[in-house]
Amino acid sequence: MDSIPVRELNQHTSAVLARVAGGESVEITVSGRPTAMLIPIHDNTAGLADLIRRGRLIPASDPTPMATPPGEPDLSIDSTEIVSELREERL
Image (tube, rainbow, N blue to C red; front, side, top):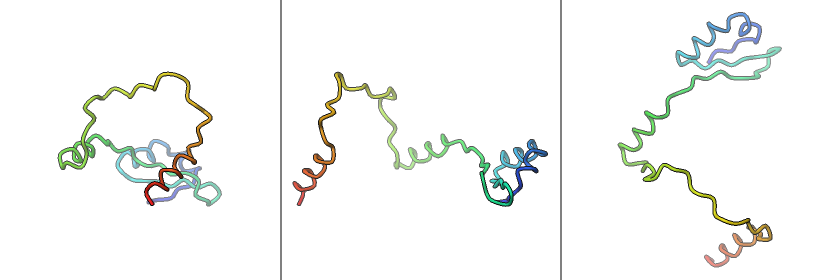
């Protein structure tokens, strides 16, 4: 990974972005200290297709989002207490 000062990024933005689009990651420094990273955005659909093909991922049968349960949530319930009780049951 290459490191460039922010001044160079400002002066050669198109060239730096072309490098990143080509797959290179670039660290941006301000006063010599690392401040940001420019990384390429990868197409994750190919990775998902590979996982499905290998049987490591099962796609959702219904792609619509799950519905929110009806009614107002009971804010008096302490989730910590519930988890503690469930852990005690396993012991």
